[in-house]
Every structure is written in structure tokens, then in C-alpha cells.
Length: 493
Ligand code: SF4
Figure 1 (cartoon, rainbow, N blue to C red):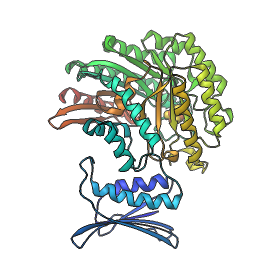
Figure 2 (cartoon, rainbow, N blue to C red):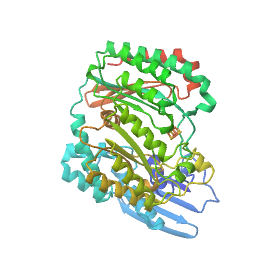
Figure 3 (cartoon, rainbow, N blue to C red):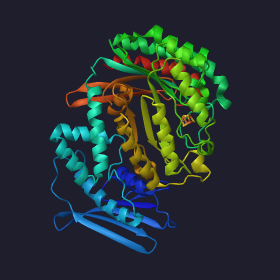
Figure 4 (cartoon, protein in one colour):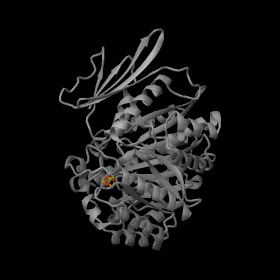
């Protein structure tokens, strides 16, 4: 697809909008009058957005050409709307292009023009500024969000508020990254390394991760911060052996005061990595919440997506965790998996409801171009089915005592939908809420981890980020630099 821009620099928004409708197509962006991009002559689809002065006014134009057929929409720029946080010209131009794409593709994205990761955060900012009724109206009329998604944003916002109200400026969360998995799922684009190739790196990784945890603890102490949540993610942290897990989690216990901690989560994502020994280590080291992720309970689909476990193994892992005393278990599902029917998803969700974990997170499959599914041409996007599945989850989970408490979106999701965490009252993960709201310090340790510090300013707050190297090999070979970067934490208050 060619995307031509003229007289504006809304490159990011216009491209994101085109991607809602053409998630897998390469988009060639051409800025008229600049040297950016080259038009692909072979591509049958060309979108144009331009801003031109005309008779003392500002004219906005969008057009969409598919083969020989071309449609155009025009409008004049209206007075600035005070409720809008960005550039109103950008929004009005997006409305024109959205209308053309919607008509050509016969599909209306239910989040309308919104392409960002955190729609609930935007909804809250509008609510704080203008009240919830106006925020809803603005979502509907300005961003073209569907009533169902506005209702979801509102419910999620109210649930989040209770958790955010507990936050104090001296609180922080600790994130531990273990970017290893037993095998790579076919839909994954994560930097996670398969242990088949990188098993030999793990012992050194564990040792250096402990050093970084100790360094982070010193910085937290310097700033007089209180640790309120620990989240060990990945990857699949339970790829580590029981002994390696013990090394890392004992180091956390030694290095930090856990008495303020409201949550200690370990992602035990792949059921085939869970053993009674590992669960005993987690318990011993104070982890109180784990995530066991079936994604689906359909064995045929599990095979297609390259997960080397069965529904039966998931059930066994769940019972094993209950047996080990875990009373706060999350389970992740994905809608939009290739070949999965609506009925199959209903069966999976209904079975999970019988098992009754404390929280269920429903993800919409993200169509990643670096995933094996994409590379092998096996992605089949069925936006309508994914939408029906999410609607079912939005309906039956609340009927069974779960409420949405955090929500985020990614680019290239099937049908441009969302990921939603549902939890029984009192079992929400504060970490998930804080990471979405970006209102709490997070000290990240491990490959790919990002430390985020909320630095107060006169006009609100600014987030300072300190990045770790992404890949385990770099993390190990350049660990001195990682420790130097950690030193910056204490200087940033
Ligand atoms: S478990 Fe998660 S991180 Fe690991 S390969 Fe699968 S999708 Fe990727």
C-alpha cells in the first residue's frame, strides 16, 4: 500500500490507521515535497491525505485508490475542540481517511480511530477533565469508538481507580525478565530465545541477574522507595530449573524488604514447565500469584501454534499449583488463533470457568510479521470470529464474578480489538494496572527489561526510561554497562 502525505507530518497516525485495515501489508509512506519514501508503482492501493490552504481556509483532503477505483473525501478545518489533546487537524484528517477505508474494506474497527496502546488512560484523562459523560460522548463522536468498547473502557477505568488510589510516590515495582522459553510459539515475535539453542547461557544469566537485582536494591534504598509488587515475566521464567529459580528469588528476598509487597507474580506460562519442586521454591520465596497460560484447550490448535503441551497438561499444572497452595492463579487465553472456531473458544472459556482461576486474561492475537505463522503464510485473519469470541468473554466472565481491570492494545491485532484482564474482586494484579497507567516507578532487571522512573514536574510528570540490552548474549557480555546504567537510577529522583 502507498500512503502519500502532503502538507502535514501526521505520518505515524495515518500509517497506523491504514494498518488497522491492512494489518499485514507493507505500507510505503511518501511525504510529498520531502525525500521520505518512494511510491511502489506495482501496488494497487494508494491512500492520500493532504492539507492545503484554500480561499483563506484550511482544506483537508483524503482519497483512496484501489486499482482504477478512486474515492475522495474533503472537509474544511473547524474551530479547535478544547476536549482534544492532540492536533485537531490530525483527527479530522483521520476521520476522512477512516471513512474511505471503512467503506472500501466493509469493516468498522470497534475502537474507531484509536490506535494507541492505552485507550483507558485516555478515557480517564478525558473523564478527569470533563466528566465521564462528556468523555463517553467524545469517544463516540470524535474517535468513533463503538458503545460496547466505551462501556468496557468505563468499567475498566473504575476498577483500575481503586488500585491506583493505593499508589504512593515512594512505591515501586520490580520486574524480572527471564527471556527463555522451552520452544518458540508460532505466533511469537518476542526476543525470547529457545532453550534448545541457548540453554548454556542460563547459568551465567542467572548469576548476572542476581547481581543486577542487588544493584537495583541499592538504588531503591538510596531513593527510599518501597517495593509493592514483584513481577517475574519473560519468556517463561519456569523454564529455569528449581535451583535456578531459587537462586534468583532468594536473591530478591535477601535484597529487598517484602513487607510492603501486595503482589508477587511469577509467570509460569507454559504448563509443561511446571513441577512440584519449582512451585515449592516459588512458595518458599513468597511468590503468591502465578500465571498458567493454556491459550486454548483445543489440542489441535495447540499443535498448530507450536505449544508443546496439551489441555490435559494444563489441567494437571493447574491442580498441581492448587495442591502447592496457590490461591491466586491467572490463566491467559488468545482469541483469533488460526483455525480456532468460535465453538472451540467457547469450550475453552467454559472449561476455565469450571476450574475457576482467580483471573483470566483474554488476548487478541497480534499478527506479528516476525512470527513463524506469518513467515509460513499461515495467518488467517478472521476479525468477525475474534470479535464474537471477545464479546462472549465480555459477557460470560462478568456473569461468573470476574470484572475487567486492565486493558491494552497492540498494533496488528486481529480485528483491531484488545487484551483484557478480568479478575475476581481482590485478585487484580496491581502490577498490570501500574504498567498500563505509567504512574509508578518500575525497576527492571534482566535482558530486555526497562526501568521507568516517574519524575514529577510542574506540568505533571515525565517518565525517564533506562533500557537494558535486549538479548541474553548481549546482557551477559556487556553486563558492566548494565550495572553502570543502574547507577543512574539513584541520581534521577
Ligand atoms: S511462551 Fe510467550 S514468550 Fe515464549 S515463545 Fe511462547 S509466546 Fe513467545
